[in-house]
Image (cartoon, rainbow, N blue to C red):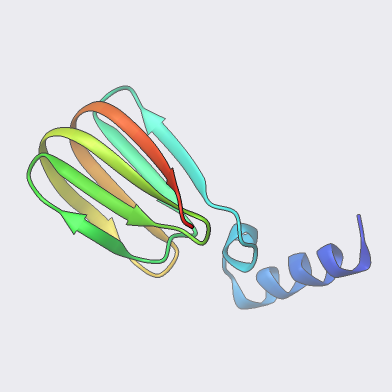
Length: 93
């Protein structure tokens, strides 16, 4: 592990935040087709019943489906529940 990564990991531990929160990468996990968790996001671009778009550093993540509800949102993660049909990644230009 590089010195920078080691420092970042120690800093995240001290601040009691996830390591990913200090990096530019997002982490996406799905639980079936009912729940999506996106960590290290930059906020919401769109929030509708059938579409949610989440901003990240390099791209937007659009979740398509129906009956969406934001179950949790904070500066580190967003949890979207509903019937998920599709996830689209759009690179920013």
